[in-house]
Image 1: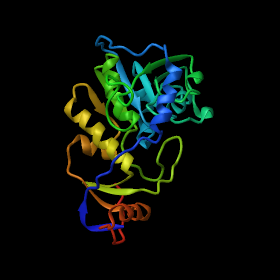
Image 2 (image 1 turned 45 degrees about the vertical axis):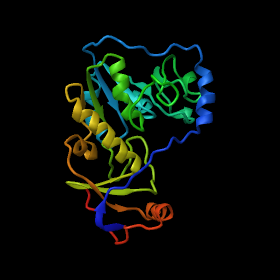
Image 3 (image 1 turned 120 degrees about the vertical axis):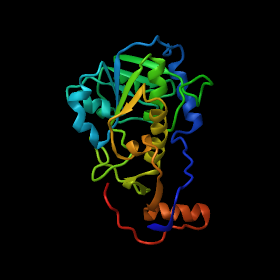
Length: 261
């Protein structure tokens, strides 16, 4: 559904794991050493997400000094012959059959089953549980800039973080999202509220610190890095219903013809 008056929506992100569970899971990392501030160095880091663009850059990613695969992407990269460190900020359970690799960088509040999948685990606190913990946006991708600087990286490139998708949502799986939106930013981009927020947050990091952070993801993220104006021009029927339930009204009513970016 589209609105005759294109607009932005004030999305308020919420953690999918209850705070009580996060606090309980912290106990499992008691006494484990945390990542500490490292001196700056010249090793290059690739941070890789599950966007379709990743497939176009595998040979390039393999040449980096260190590769971080976000969530299940780490296992996928290792199957492609690219050694990748598993990284996440998520606290919920993972499908352990899809976890692969030797090393991981995990939040101290992660699910207690997760560390056992790796031989080498490094931990970090998050701002949600510690006043000096890792901060950033709402996803693993948007926390990665802070984590990278703590570990001394000055040359960080993001792949597969385009924040929009066409037919397949991920290189290693396809998800059906009921809360879809169309963001018009030069072109039409099919995305979700979560990915829109990620593109905004990560785009701001890269735009303000281009000497340290780069992206080769394309999609909506590239538009955000460029600082282009954007607006939401359409929402799915399910999201329209939620907007009406929350606000009592929705401006999205007219059928919309998506023009693929």
